[in-house]
Amino acid sequence: MIVCAGRTEYFSFAHPIGVGLIEAAMNLTQMALFDKPEFLLFVGTAGSFGEHEIFDIIESRGASQIEHCFWKKGCYTPLDNVITSEGLNVSHETLINSSNYITTDPSLWPYFTKQGIHAENMEFFSLLQVAKEHNIPAGGIFIITNHCNKKAHEAYKTNLKEALQRLERYVREKFSL
Image 1 (cartoon, one colour):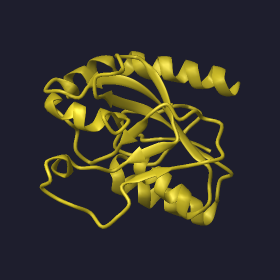
Image 2 (spheres, helix red, strand yellow):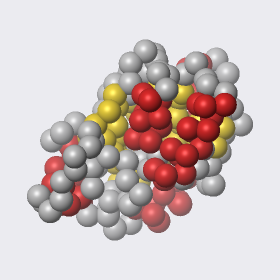
Image 3 (cartoon, rainbow, N blue to C red):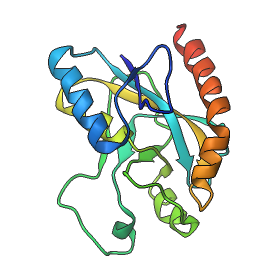
Image 4 (cartoon, one colour):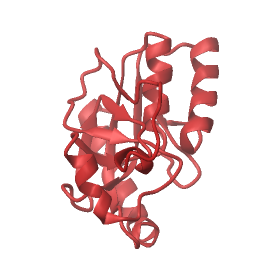
């Protein structure tokens, strides 16, 4: 099953699951309970922590859920904050960080990239967590729409239409859709 966030990111071949960690987790859990897919593939946009350029396409089977305070030792979590999925034929080029907040401070980029986290997407960690709980192989394909800086939202809006077209072409070619 191919899924996407929805709202501003739709694909004809993907089921929308909602925006952010909570909506994605709730909707995917319902899907897994009532119509368990053989695999989950998330397609959507991501912001770059500097090592990927606008319109780069990256694939991943791993995500983190790390808030900025973690890097400054201003918080902790008793939960696992990195998850990977096995079994889906999607490469593991980079980890994707997920949060309900968009990073706008480039001074934080090195904290992420030092740990192999090169982009952020609001839903991916939830997808991998639900997939793990229900033993569903999972992965994600992302297109970079912005860098994680003060102009992140402006760049996202400017690049969204072309990004979605490029990502749709990529996914259709990769999976012969």
